[in-house]
Image (cartoon, rainbow, N blue to C red; front, top):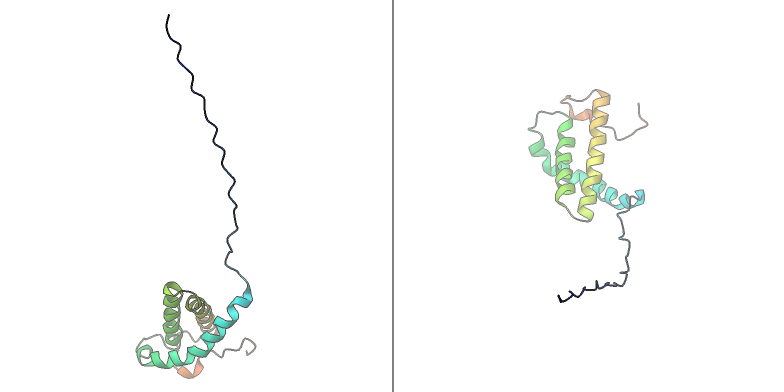
Length: 124
């Protein structure tokens, strides 16, 4: 008589449930940009003065300052970490707003430095 083959039993593996924790997500709280915006406002003028000899050779008129600082802000936002990245992001927003103001005011290619953006949204 032929031997019967023994059936193997499937072992059930019981695993202890792992505790899961929600990762803290980056906050989109507007108040988290107050300090980086203040820092950017404080360092904008010295950086603009340092870049002025180079930016004066660019044929973009009034917009050369905004474009130069926008490029610096872009690289700070792209390559920076932590606070530097936030300052670069705020700088991009500020410089984009200034370029937009130049476009609306019609001083896009004006080479007269005296008609730079007024930084006032209430002035007409």
